[in-house]
Image 1 (cartoon, rainbow, N blue to C red):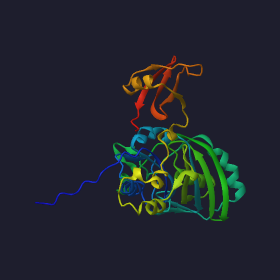
Image 2: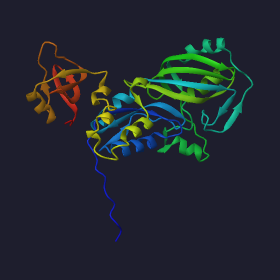
Image 3: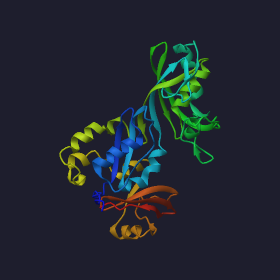
Image 4: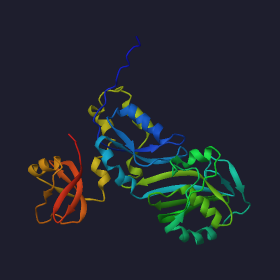
Length: 315
């Protein structure tokens, strides 16, 4: 008889951890390491980072997974280096060279074209992307040798700045953009517009929604903190739990209302309640409600009535 494998205990960890993802590691591999540190009942990430990218990877534990869409819909800030004169099939350093150029843009020409890439613009995603085509990921089709053509789609770029030019072959940019923007495609299109070609040789995400550099923690730091307890209950390790931000951090764009214990009992059952008080919102708008100092639910307010969409179970 095969020896039965011991099942690890899972713990009700609730909240957000903002990982400073290292280079050469996939987002799923990073998630796997965090599972071994926190042993959570439930965990997921808000927005994948390529292995060749570093920086802000928000991780949702437990009840925070209910708020992932609010983070993924938030603005992102990236700092990225473009190397001119080379285009790869992936638009970054992972791919094969498909085009070269001797043209090197100067600072003046770069600054002149940047306004064309700000606002609502059309962007054609890279062939090597996670976009689905007839049920298949584009990168799987491209790796299989198929010609992948993805239609251009509207994206929002709020800001695109030239940060520095280390030498004539490279330029460093910072972009603030909305959901669905591919920085690799920005580099490709900038190169084309400047009469040359370019690809991303360094990429770091600095911000996702409410989470920025000040919130980030590294895997090395987490491993060092967790060394002394070897899988014991993380909830009993204050230094480790101090790296977890409250679930409601993700709801930064919503207003909040404190409700009574009687109203909370109704909301827990999924029932609507009338919001009372001089400052109570009338709607229509989305808010979250708090009872007894704890996040209880988020939902819609209309005509002074709150209807919960998702209820939280946070002890």
